[in-house]
Structures are given as structure tokens and as C-alpha cells.
Image 1 (cartoon, rainbow over the protein chains, first blue to last red):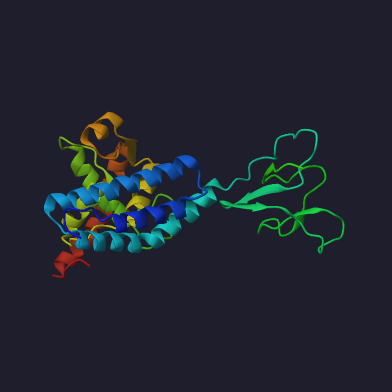
Image 2: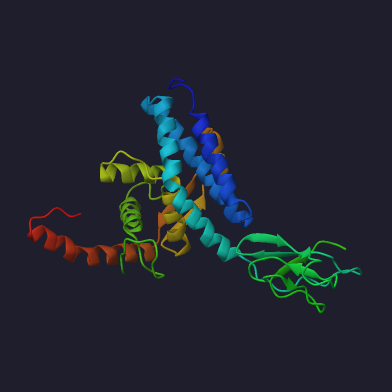
Length: 152
Length: 126
């Protein structure tokens, strides 16, 4: 590698990390963070080229910036995941056949309800998320934080 | 304005990095280029601290995000045509707000007595 080549390895690694920790975030927030980091990486590489910094050193700088920022990335992700956790109202009225599964969204994580025949042999559908703790889907409709049905 | 060093804080408090960002943003506000982007800010902080080390992505953008969400900075994507003309990705540009100026001034005032007492004792601030 030499100074004329962009340190693509470190940039790609950083972008993969950003894609990973922004996955399942609110799309606007996710896209903003991804685009902003992409811009930063580009600026960093361009600045290094202007100053004649070799790509090995730039790669090292980028890796250091990536690794040192991981705790803040995770903390930010945790905060934003909580902020976007949706306890949004009940799913809209569904067409004819009621769904057999539901998506439960808590703190940015999605959980698909499961039939748990060994829990109670009643053919019921239970949610396995941390909030519901194997709560049965009520017959009158989903609890407030259940997002949507997945079809019969 | 309370300045604390740990990550857990009450709403409205600032960590030293956020104070530094606001201070730089205030200085930029009176220049001919009042806005700045993330990498530019990382370089300014590295120069200011004479460390030569650029801030980590996570640390930098988490702080910027928090300042923007609390109304101390504005954040806007630059015109796509400008970025296209320069052949680079669009920059997200930050600029200090009145609220940010007030927070920076308040933080500076609250930090001043500590600096003064340290100076009187002939000690270097830590």
C-alpha cells in the first residue's frame, strides 16, 4: 500500500460496524449516522492524501478511531434504541383472519411471538420478549406494545 | 450549567468534550465560515489539545448528536450540488445556536473559579 491508495480496509471495516450497530434503528436516524460516518471517512482519507500521510498510518488512525468509539457507539445505540422502542398503540384492525403471530417490539428489538405447546397445551400464542415474559396473546387484541400481525 | 466528567448525567449537564465543542463552535460563529462538519471538528479539537489524535467516531458523533438534539447546535446536510461539484459525500454541517452560546458562556463561567484557584496555587490544570 502507498499514500495514493485509500485505506479501504479500515474504512470498509468502520462502515460495516456502523451498519451493524445502526441496524433496526429508526430509518432517519440510521441513515443520518451512516451517511455522516461515510462522509467523515472520506474526509479523513482525503485529508491524509493532501498531507501525504501513508495509507498504513491512515489505516491505523481509522482503526483506532473505530475501536475507541465502540463504547460510545453502543451507548448511543442503546439510548436511541430505547427512544424508538415502540409501545405504539395496538395494531390496526386486521382483516378477516386474525394473525397467528405478532411482532413485539421492545427497546429496539423485535420478537416474534411463538406457539409454545409445552407451556400450556391450549394452542395459544405467547410472546417471548423480555417485557411480556411469555404472556399469552389476549383474545381481545394485542397489548399496547404489540406492533403488528404476521398473517394467519 | 453543571459540567461533569462521567457519562451518566442529568439532562442539561455537559461533559467536558461538549463544552469544548461549544467553545469551538462559538469561535467559528464569528468567522467567515460559521459552520463545521464532524471531521473538521475532530481536527480542530486535536489541534486545540495538541494531541494529534483525532476523536473516535463514536465519541464525536454521539456528542454532536446530543448537542443538536438539545438545541445547542443546528445540524443540516449541505446542498447536494456542492458535494457533487466537489466529488465527495455530503457534509453534515453544524452551527452554534443562541442556546448553545448561552450554555458555552455559562460553562466557561462555572469553570473559571476552578481555573483561577489552580492558577493561584501554581498548579497546572488537569
